[in-house]
Length: 343
Image (cartoon, rainbow, N blue to C red):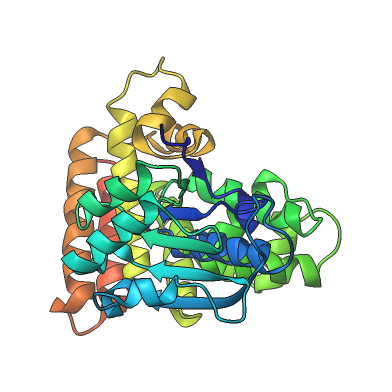
């Protein structure tokens, strides 16, 4: 029977002595890289704890570059004794013969080799993934983190790892400031932990980023759907001036308007937590959107979505000035708040 799969254990990856084979599955590259690094560190810094020798050499190769027979060479015993670590990246890209060799090796691994195989998951190379995970290999799942609540939890864990604490407002401001990329979130947490003191709250993040946290696409979207035209335009211009990509602003506008439709069509009595799980947003965001819905009619939401769709196309190449396209979209969204008419 296969051992149970686990998620990457916090920011540092899995802990403990590594087994003969570890399979890391998922598209979240940062977590996958950390999991690989943790296995290598555990293999090269002490006894594996399973009777195998401590690894010395580390061989790290993309599966696409392996030719038939190369795997046997990588995993063969060294003339000088000692084990090794073999990392096979992106196993979904392996050719058929190499995939067959990997499957056979995992079924009967060498006691002196620690093998780590990464696989993106999905349909490509699915039969190989099944073979890799059906034996005694340890499986670590690193799925793409897409939910805002999960990104907040990741940031909280990063700061906790650095011995720091952030409140909810600080975490939201941090994500507003740096976006959704996990690498940027991790880097921002490291910088904040090193350069600030005390609890990391919204004021700390705002001071650190000198206004960037208040000039994100999500702030522009919040002001627009709340009908605050002047503030929305001011934040839009500041966001563009500080380097926020226009495509991220249209994405935030689309998310803001789309949430109006999703939350507005749900029964008011439905708990925020249940609705949050359905639409992929944190409960605090559901509560905020319910407040933002005042003044919106279904026809207005539909027209606002159309305005955002047009702006998205213009920002991606149909307009000479992305800034003008975004400003026009913001004006139309605010105008739609009291009815379906566009500005």
